[in-house]
Amino acid sequence: MKLNRRIFNKQLLISAGGLTLVNSLPFNLQVKSEKKGLGIALVGLGSYSSGQLAPALQETSECHLAGIVTGTPAKEKQWAQQYDIPQKNIYNYQNFDDIKDNDDIDIVYVVLPNAMHAEFSIRAAKAGKHVICEKPMAMNVEECDAIIQACNDADVKLSVGYRLQSEPYTQEVKSMVREKTFGEVRYVQSDAAYISRGNPDQWRLNIDLSGGGALMNMGVYAIQSNIYGSGMNPISVTAQEYSTRPEYFKKTDETITAQFEFPNGATGNMMTSHNIRANRHYTSCDNGWFELQPANSYGPLKGRRSDGTLIEFPHRSQQALQMDDFARHIAQGTVNRAPGEMGKRDMIIVEAIYKSIRNGGTRVDLDLGNLGIVSEK
Image (cartoon, rainbow, N blue to C red; front, side, top):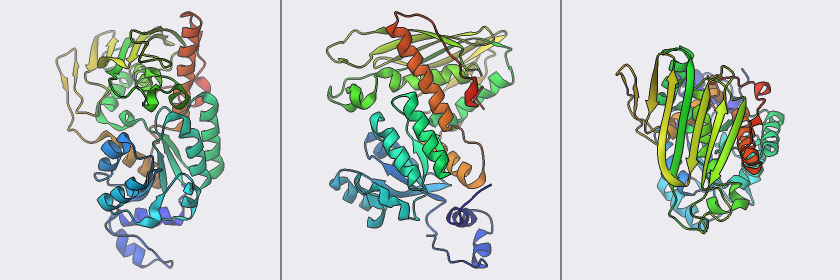
């Protein structure tokens, strides 16, 4: 396992007896005792960073909020005061590359509109920082490849912001599929949708910034749900698009449905929308079924099985679990639950769905076997 000295130092401090060992080491250490684990800088301080990620970083045990990157000077002062962020750890989009010289920051979390994911993920990698890129990974497969290549070239780790990959309800679904609790999977249904009533000028409705509508937002969760709910990558997809509010969804998709075929003959359906409320996962097997409802929201989630068993876990911040998982992957070599190849796989499926819609709902074959992610771990 390859660890640089700074990350090794920080990991020692959060392990049993680490401080005693640190004091005997021959090199100097500068680690604040109140800061746990690896330092994360959030790039983009919109609603997801302010409402979810920053609060989650107050609950993490393997990482902490170390820096911010924003184009709004007023936010610099507000965040610095609220989260005790020193001025030297505050950047804007112009001087962002200077982050390479900041040893307080180990991980850069890109939380910008989709069109900016590739640029800042690549810049972060070139600065020698590990990268979390918020979902969807990029605007297209080509950009996914560029991000993966940049991280490989810089020898840094890459993860996609798939919070559900780290939470226990999703892990339980994967376990039941893997262990064939109810036999072979025959059908999967996944719905991930909400009603957008907000500002018509928001970036998610701007095709140049979002790259798409519901599919590029909640749709990736519906795709993922079909995959981990079957334990397989799909081999084909057929898709349809519906619009009832064209005056609001002028250039982005409002509602998309898609049907998947899996290698064992199982089928799957997904629905995603910016104009419907839906939040469910359902898997039907030879000898029973299980479901989560809600399945995609920030929690608490809820599940049940056909044998009457409730699926219940204590609620914890999904974002805290996600970021701790990635920090452990970097520092301890544990599994990367949402690697870049997973983000690329999902973008291949997104592009196939759009292709099917453009071609009048025709079947599009998928070849996903060369990505190294055959089924969900």
